[in-house]
Image 1 (cartoon, rainbow, N blue to C red):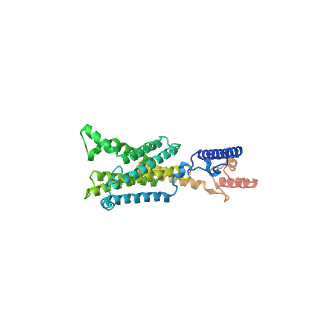
Image 2: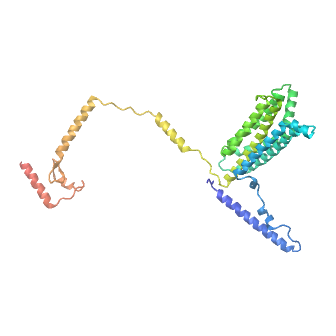
Image 3: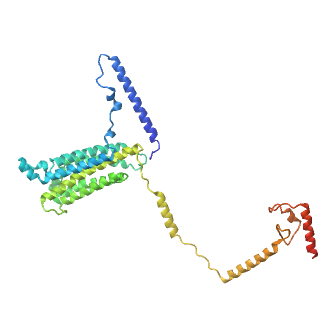
Length: 378
């Protein structure tokens, strides 16, 4: 588990403060109840502030809950897509005068209402992520500020789903400028809102990449939005106009659900990381350093080895011969224990102890002198 320095102490202080505040609130309620004994309390101690749920308690902790959220979005999208496809039949059977509630692209439809709710909750969740992420101590560049922009973007998209402001802006600018590009002057709302939304999405993706599940949901949302845009501008071949609007509306609604799932998943990750319950994957710097050292050693040139010459071979042979002759002269054994050198003097006896040999007795010294005299006489 990863624990940043000071995290455990800060959490301990917060818990102590909560316990002290809870005890003081309980004592205050008991004293007030004793003073006003005539008026009985209307709530039990379980209704105290210390027992109120926190905002982070509403964030799902289990993957099963997140999976159910995604499945609910897919089922709701499929249901609305089926209602859009069979809208004519439903209108004839039910005798409805308009098909607007079943139209996926209409501002006042059921799909627009669901999209507005999903994006509004996503905006609130982005604010929750910002309130926790801004306390991260290793975020030196302040990347947590992107979640303010993400919250504002989700809120504006929620408003646009209900009101259809982008069509109003496109038609107004096309009327004043006298120039329209793409379908229904879509170039204007793409330039005004598309580029900022793309920048916010990329920045949020760089912050979300620590959580793989949330990053997967963001990639799925991007694919849904691109598919919806391609179908809206006519890049996706469709046999009928109804099929094109179906593809556009279904992929757009599914993209909103994927954004909501990504935000909820990353909020779960941030909360658990703040509590020290998530193991963060660190980049493998050792492997990179090892590969760099191997590449550096491979590029380094080895020193050129000198080739032997005839003169060096002759000198080597002469040196070996002289060394062998000196070894034969020095290795003469007298008493079977150590070699006897040619030049023997009194200083050699004194150096015996320093050379590591055992000290000779007086009788051994006399014997050595006799052997030396015999050698000189011979």
